[in-house]
Length: 134
Image (cartoon, rainbow, N blue to C red; front, top):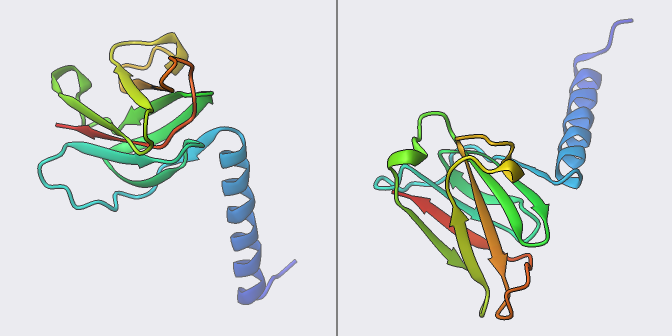
């Protein structure tokens, strides 16, 4: 069966939208292309409450694990073992903590950083945040 060029483009576009929707609804935020100009940061990401990426540099993926728990996977060229991390919450009275090292929640992946967000009572709560890797 031969499809015209316009029909092939429509099929490809529909498939891409379906795959993107499946990835986001499954809790995995697909990494945006490096779209940040941050010459002094090795990696950086701004993340929405649901784990979707607003903008990034040097980040492979962000996964929302459950309420207030996220895994940020760095690109292979960024070594988390000799880096300094800075985080910021985008909500008032929301605390952000990074956990380095192999974490079972992140599949014991040495390139992943577990990020947790909690409210003022210490309860895990979804919240947007930024992470910069120096």
